[in-house]
Amino acid sequence: QVQLVESGGGLVQAGGSLRLSCAASGFIFSLYTMGWYRQAPGKERELVARLFNSGSTNYAGSVKGRFTISRDNAKNTLYLQMNSLKPEDTAVYYCNVRTSVNEAHWGQGTQVTVSS
Image (tube, rainbow, N blue to C red; front, side, top):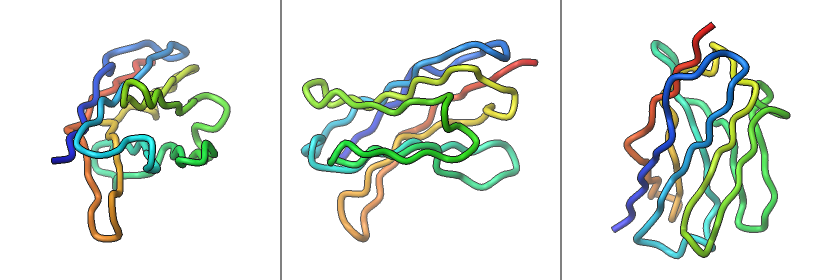
């Protein structure tokens, strides 16, 4: 059974940093592309960053240069280092893996709030 558990969210002032973690289990972590998404109140869930099993990455334009996605395959953990945070980064952040064409899995989310 696939499980994704996010942690590391919180309240931070604008310009600050946070590191999110996603502990994964129930699948061979190193084989899959992993992603971070976020959903702000009243908005649709959006892709923040994706890390392919090849090691390549892509980022939403709004976070490029500020956020870094990484993984530790030995610990089955995905990370999102967030620097220079802005109030518009406030959202619930979710970890995601798609284990097949028809199976996308999500964590419960972790709240990030950036005060101005």
